[in-house]
Image (cartoon, rainbow, N blue to C red; front, side):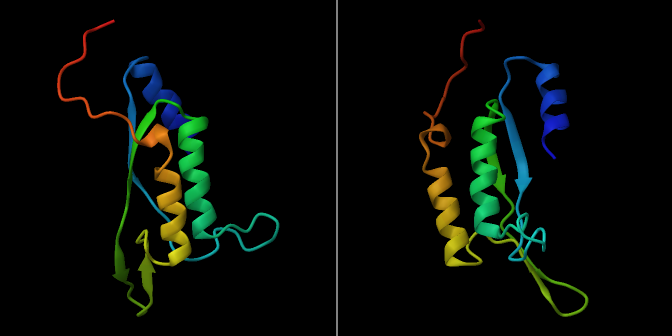
Length: 111
């Protein structure tokens, strides 16, 4: 899902960091058949880990924190705190030092 956009963006500028502007999932299985079934907390953990390890130029990721009612009366709940487990997975993931870099308030010299 991220491979081809990541590669394309990386070709535009080999040094520029990349930001994921929206990513999220709801409180439902993404796949229903074991062993591939994955739930929101695992999805969050896996996403944050993959951004860091497989896509090292991703330096920022904005979580899409929203809930809305659908036409059938059900709700789509993408909020990071839709469950204690999901919130904990997010907090643990973003606590990694790779996500906690120093704030740069001035232009960096060109290499």
